[in-house]
Image 1 (tube, helix red, strand yellow):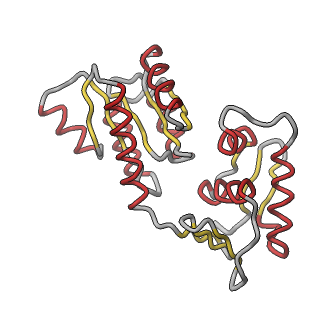
Image 2: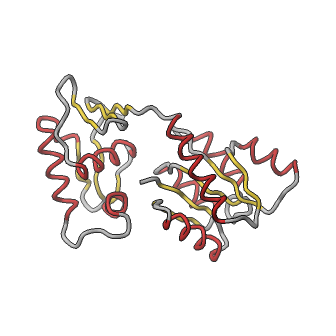
Length: 224
């Protein structure tokens, strides 16, 4: 499931955009000001960032510029603005935006542009994620440790490991993991604990790599 971060201070428009994207199967996070938006984008880079220009705290141009300076991967950015001058567009693209959409806009066009940016971002990202002894092939959906064989991981245990690996070295909270695994419909039972147990059993000698940070969540225990 693709993740998208919508940074927009106008609450009705933000809710409209979120509903549109959720209806298309996206996992949506929201922020109403620039500082929070930058924090969220750096802590857990989304597949696409929908960014308004006129934001309190930190405007969209500066947010995009700082994101490009500080992020450890390229986050596709779609800027939203009512400013249609060439100089405004020059500033947006100069700060690192990937696409530009003028307000008011059709919801379908916003969705198409986000889908195109997500595909572009996926093409530019290596399918193989190496974390210590763990080798995660996101294209094949396969995990191996060291020179060992592919680990027999069920789908949710695999997704749990990928979430931790993509977020490393950050600790991922339980609520974040539940949202990534089940979106807004988590199971009633403590399924996360069950999938964590399954993951650790599959990792065998490497199971200590998945560390519980009590009162916070989980993270991969690897050298920084």
